[in-house]
Image 1 (tube, rainbow, N blue to C red):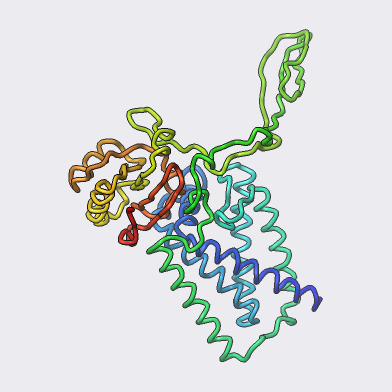
Image 2: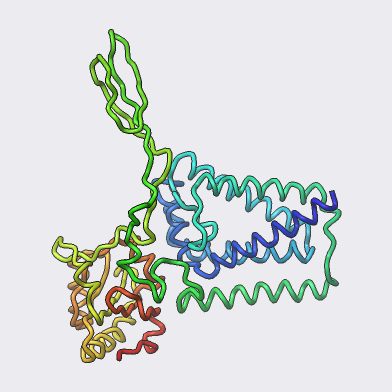
Length: 365
């Protein structure tokens, strides 16, 4: 038991720290995931949606803290009960997502590692078992350092996590795991290789044969049956390859201009997924940035999921000399964790990407 407890302590502690740090690197992204869970179509807690960011920060800091406390062997009862309650909550959410197919990615490891709902649920069940082992053998969990040192290290962990969270919230994630990171080419990210895995479906064909219903399952071929066709149901049994970048469009007047705009040698994108939630003061600086970019031969465009009436009103109010194009809100949230944020591209390759607090860092050569 002592051996199992030691292994479980290291495994659970490190996993919680790693998982928490990855989400702490991008708390805005985790808050988007929480908004999905809180939405009417999933858990139906819409009153919590406006508080998703605050909740995400508290959860990820607690996740890191519990991992540290477990490794230190400090406040053992508090740590174990907190770990148990947290993993029960996570297990419920991942099971709910998997069984009802509600949220296809739990966000357990942010964008660093994508897990299917059932993979996420399996991971949480395994973690639950390890935590139960810790409960059973908690007498073997002894402190590594003295109480004073443990208090200092605990305080240091909370302080470091809080400072890191504050930094990434006011700038951008320190490590960008998304397909729109600096150096990535958007067009290349949308390519599907010729030898890519294709999705596999089962087709359940329903016929009426001699007055009775008969179901024949194939992988797509229409079965040869001497009877009356009634219905067919399809079930995906293996997912096909999905390129890192998909559903990317830049629409104007109902026409997708992405291919054309991604060939621009000098392109500035002002991204604001929802103008009603944007930091409006930033547009005063964006106006100056756009004018400077234009003088240096750049084409400047806005990208938003807001209505045309809203974009026209904003452009008029802040005297913005560039047009807004429509792009899906989820795509814009993925591109940059800032509302608004600015990207500089060269023939589809992202050269610069900044938060609205860092607009002064942009360089137009």
